[in-house]
Image (cartoon, rainbow, N blue to C red; front, side, top):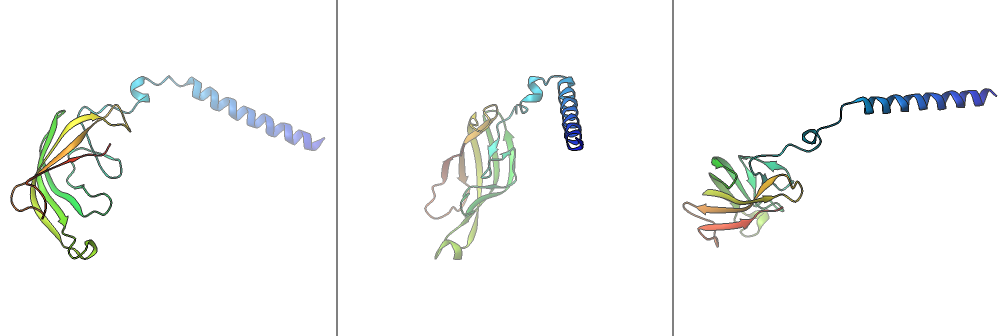
Amino acid sequence: MRGSLVGTAVTLAAGTMLTAAMTTASASPPETAAQAAPAQLTQPVLVDCLWHRDVRPADFVLACGDGNSRLTGLRWTRWSPQAADAEGVNVVNDCKPYCAAGTFRSYRVTVRLDRPEPWKKHPGTQHYTRMSLTYTGARPEGFQQVMTYPLWD
């Protein structure tokens, strides 16, 4: 008999806690649509290698797999719903004689982001889908003065 009293007490205590939790949750005011959904960003974002949203980043990795090309020292002059512009440096590994033994070289560039579209991971967020680099002086071997890249989604 004593064992069934303990079992009954435990069951009643658990039921009371569950009821209290449900009452507290249902007594809370309902979430508005703005609270339930992430805030809509008014400006497009730049999606990085780790799928993070960046706005006016100072640095950006172009070669996500090995880090052999990155933008550094970015100074943004425009970040609008249509396009973004910056000046900075593209640091590129020459991979000579092979990438692990290569030398990183710096090249001045202007950066242009454009073609904003909804981001598949967060459809309410616009992200730039194309990047153009214009080399203002020297450029890596085999590169054109203007290099255009699709950006990941």
